[in-house]
Length: 523
Image (tube, rainbow, N blue to C red; front, side, top):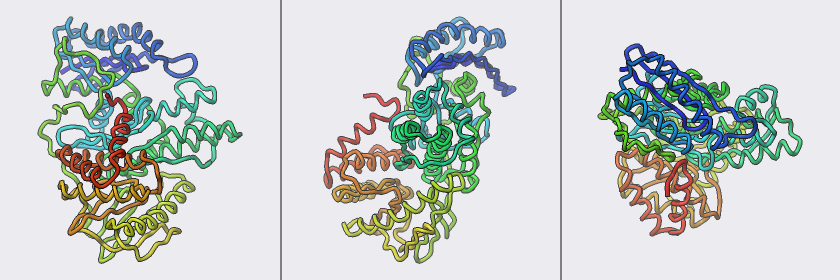
């Protein structure tokens, strides 16, 4: 099969030809480069209008008349750009009399990594301009395991570079200046497997304005932002029991990010793959490759039904090309469990050690390990005083980042998902929030079940009186249900009902607002 792919979600006008027999992909791209500042939607659309016909013509000339399907990026992206791409794709498919395939741009980033790596069912970190999220395959769909709650990682970096007077794209400029920089402290925000970049970008701008060397700020910006991406990726691997990670998106071209992810995976015994740069940045090759898989599965779209979808979320896509796949999940050794943050040795008691993370800068690593160990010990005690079941501590060593505690429960909640179990979690979180305690990472792996339901691992927890923080706890737990349950809908309903009965219904209302902030959520 030979598929012609067309991409144009924002800045890259691109067309490609993919041959399934030879596995060869030929890409033709004309990228939009603004003279100053960031991407302007009107100017980007004008570029698409002039560039798409030219790159499509080159792809047609390369393929000749031997085209079996036309695939195009249907979304997400800038509406004016997508409409130009959609019009071109319909015209080519109609003219050739071949099927049309509408591809989700973000799943194409994932699938090109899976295709090039040969991995079975990896977790994918998409780190691009407008997006930053983690995807995992479960129950016939890709699930969003975690995502940015404000802006994409590339756009966040571009906001900083515009502040210092650099033009788009800002990422390569930050990478170059970081080579001569030294470490300075910046905010670090991880909430379960979600993350936020607005605070660190504001702090980076202020640091430059206050006289810090721009090289030092660039270095520290990379060390903090990329460490956040590595940490949430490791959390996703831990939650799902997966041992494969692929990287997608233009920010993935950064050598430091790739090195950090590789080191994280090596430390936990996982495999890592980053496609070559031409498949990381926006390109039609990935559209053609996924388009071929979809066409082979019969997943095509009639021209009259092929409107573009600027808000096309990856978890809205039926994954027809992987129909019937059963994804196996790895397990831990009987005596040892490796979480995202720590290695836990199991005996009559639990010895939890937060190991140094080789991917993190030593100063940042020491700070996080020390602060989280102290915080976990304090919050385990405070929660238990409120009547929330937690393990009893027998020893804490913040310097070595270790805790020793009683062993509780028979298994993690993810291994025994029941409505009663999630109701217990809802009641426990309501109790914590009523006392101003945020768990910070209430996933199905941080709940133990047996004769009771225990909450464990308060390392990301803190005290707060903000409804927003409580709502994020609910969001994290429901996201973990989506990533581990075959049918999360009734479990989520039971969890929310229990929380609302025992706690403040305003928190559930705020949860709806938090959900709308996820990338490309519709009202």
